[in-house]
Image (cartoon, rainbow, N blue to C red):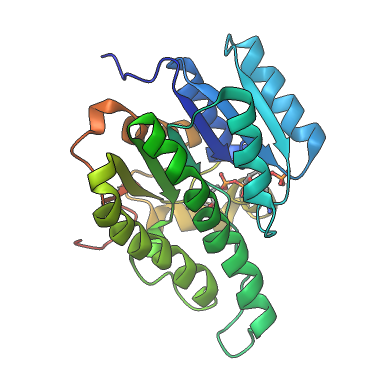
Length: 259
Ligand SMILES: NC(=O)c1ccc[n+]([C@@H]2O[C@H](COP(=O)([O-])OP(=O)(O)OC[C@H]3O[C@@H](n4cnc5c(N)ncnc54)[C@H](OP(=O)(O)O)[C@@H]3O)[C@@H](O)[C@H]2O)c1
């Protein structure tokens, strides 16, 4: 199946590991030209080198903190300077700060809103004119199974910010349909990869994690980053031309939401 991504320019925030790196790999394998960011320069360069070694010709790296106000501007500006166009934006960076609602303070909320929500909103605002110029585009937010339903005690900040992405993407999809720009979310379940948070938990508490898998993951295993990346790549592609304003669960039925 031709995905129609050859020569297209794709920005992936947080492209040095996990879902971001696998998404970059999948988009690159379809012939997309890439722009990736992360804070750690060595990790980002190592990821870019591994992609180049796999045959991805164009990989631009931009070291920046996307949670800062100037982060998205630096990334999108560098992409425009290098490639002169932008077709796909994957807002992948995100994080968590655990604590009961009562324990959280304004600083916790503002930090994670900057990281999970505003980083992608700023990048999207800057990407939209470039996508319009290119005749259309695809914006994808990486939400979570816990953006679609209650994640449980201690997750109010994560849950709220991941839900906000789904809500905003739905409205953006309505507003940008006339420009041929599709806006969607992907909601991964628990995804294990080396160096990721679930992998650390498995190393620290293998028995506890076996119980977690048994109780929560119907397929009897964690998800893999490439399984999420394939869905993101599909949404980025022309093959998903009728999908906008959607949130696709990639969670092996970990989530119990009916919508
Ligand atoms: N893994 C899961 O089970 C899971 C489940 C549901 C949803 N998600 C969501 O999927 C997304 C990716 O998570 P992940 O677990 O694959 O990866 P991750 O371990 O959180 O790494 C994310 C990537 O983002 C970069 N990054 C983090 N903070 C950044 C910042 N402020 N500015 C620029 N780059 C930054 C990291 O590089 P540096 O550290 O060098 O900056 C890394 O390349 C997140 O939004 C997460 O909430 C993950």
